[in-house]
Length: 303
Image 1 (cartoon, helix red, strand yellow):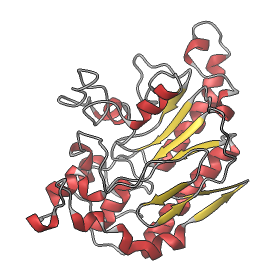
Image 2 (cartoon, one colour):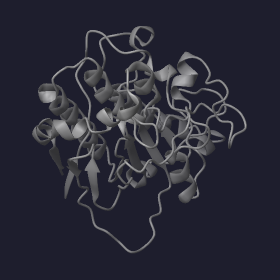
Image 3 (cartoon, rainbow, N blue to C red):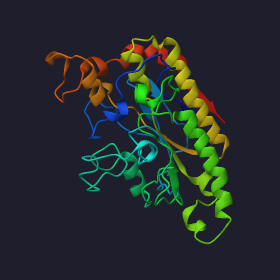
């Protein structure tokens, strides 16, 4: 079965823009210029404007049933990872649904929360969170500020999370192994850890790459080498999870770069450079100018 995959991002940079994890947008809402979110078990198109992403898997008319969800990503799907590691998310985050900060850089639920709800599953616990967590139906390895390619600066210097995609994969591999050892202890542990067969039946979701693109676009670094490297890294992670038994994948598009709050705060823009939603037009059109770089890095994952 052929399973193409794509990602986006850049290789490490010497310096970085103002801490994006502290300037994350509060409202994860749909924007008319954002490509349609699609994925898992169907064809997915329009990744970062011009990149074609297809998951060639059988399409069935019967409903999907997943006993667990495993997520890797950045702030778009972080349910408490960065918060657990580097300090709690503060108000006004979480004000519309949870009525309190809930580890999410959003005013309410994220797409990953709605995915879990749609399958009748509880919200995903962050792997890095040690308090009140339950991993029976999956785990969330996402971290706000995460990138596909590791960055050459600390969190305090550049604002990018140290939990890049390769680190999240390592966390998943450890979770898969150790959770079964703990599950075999029996008792309450069997209510907190996933069953062995859940790993092959789970839905694996990915939402990452946006922070990579802003890093090299801010620094005016050529995309010719960095984008293909990031896409190759992304493909490698998909292959690794497939080799571990994963069979169902949902890969998100990235949002329009010009709508990120830290883009709007960092870059000087004129009124003519803002669209009707207040987003930066030059950055929303940035990726279409990098089509050649994406074409060179768009790999197929074969199994």
